[in-house]
Length: 180
Image (cartoon, rainbow, N blue to C red; front, top):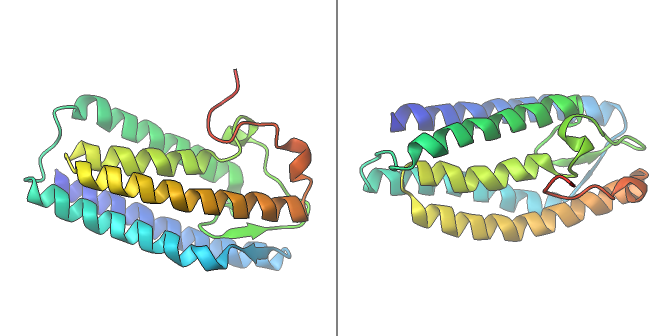
């Protein structure tokens, strides 16, 4: 089960990178400008190190499911549905890098309720994936590292959007949790 799950994760990440590369070409042709290049390498490193750490820690603990798996696995798949919803809502504007097309802001799908649903997905995955296989150290360490990098990333992204769009006029939506 562990190896199949890990292979699933790797396939998802490779697919996302291929999609991001395709989308990059499209939005650049639309006049997109890239932002946040200085921190991007750290985000890539974090995600590669996360997968490596998860793999090693889970193997060291026997690669067996947590006793909480009946709760965690459906939650993981629900998070994947949110990822797919965010991805399809952004369409060609979805990317692992920060690209802003002048005067374009996506406000459909989960982006009607949250400014950063894709980051909610990442935060939840970095907790849920290791917890599924009892990799508690990975969950804690990478949640903290991710929180730090996301604080930089979100600031850069919102600043970029504010310079090239009317982002400041619509930023009344909550960042991570839907408004009541």
